[in-house]
Length: 458
Image (cartoon, rainbow, N blue to C red; front, top):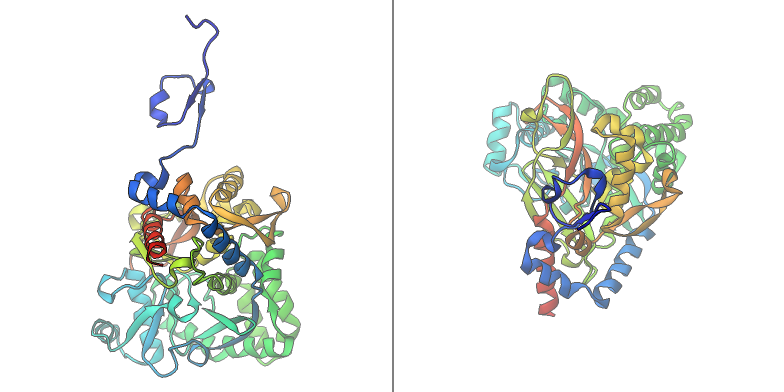
């Protein structure tokens, strides 16, 4: 007979010990390897060796060595490969046919077609898109990224970040409200895009040419120490960027107009953060044998993953809406499945991975400051090491968890966390909340099987 009481250690479902007092149970966070997929588990085990570890060391070193600099703001057709002389629109996420696109994505493509003058009515734009007379392609295939729908058209000004002879691009942030990236395309949206093309872009470019390049890594690192996390909270980064450009901006024609726009758009620096993260992660693409994740992106229908050792190949699975806080009058029933290229920030080690730096973010995405700390700590379990330039003051100035490892995800069952805005499923309604979404497990099992097949074929 046991007379002194018992302590229970449970490594299974909590339901098993439901009748035991909570204070007497230690619940271990254990899950079956590879989410219960025996074939993927065997593939992952076969990749867990010195060859993979050395490949990952090289891939992560390449990513961490990148120091993006914001050098220009130019029309996309002048700098983005493939946009010079074609009717091509870029979009967020993995490839998808027009017929399968969600409402916000299709609405943004219609708006961009009207903005470019390729169509005079929404119905005409839909027909041109449906018949392929206007082509569509992922931003990631062109060295670019865009938030939410992520649409880039040839006339749009884009941020140009570079490191040596390598470049990446991102659109300019429109601000909140009725905007193209949420699928709106009425006269107000088109007028703003025209102002961004004719005023905002050229003035910012002139400012950068006079001021000189902006060190993106340094600026984002400083913003983390001021309460940003580099994805959904960009108040500090936008303020730092505006402060650095303001003395030059104020001397230029219409510079004060641009300053007023920046002062009213706390998210402006997000797109710069995304472009910098894209440039960094692309440095690892094609590192043979590496299990480092180089891309996470969503198109409102599917989640897409790319891995260093598999090059440009996409692994996809259905994506759902984020779980979070909704604006008054909206609920999960109104939410579109997650979309946008902005998860490139998490792929590097920002956003959801850096939530410990930003306790205020929980007021936007839900949870508590303790949850923010716990999330960052959890992401350490699936990453290859701390980012040397992105320090987290609340965690004793350790670097943000950086370099998602497919094998660690499969071993622990811990999925990458992304903090994200929530779009209404109908084009043009806009943002209806913000929250947290996890990458689907299927893309990691697919990646492990593909990497094992590549190893076997060599």
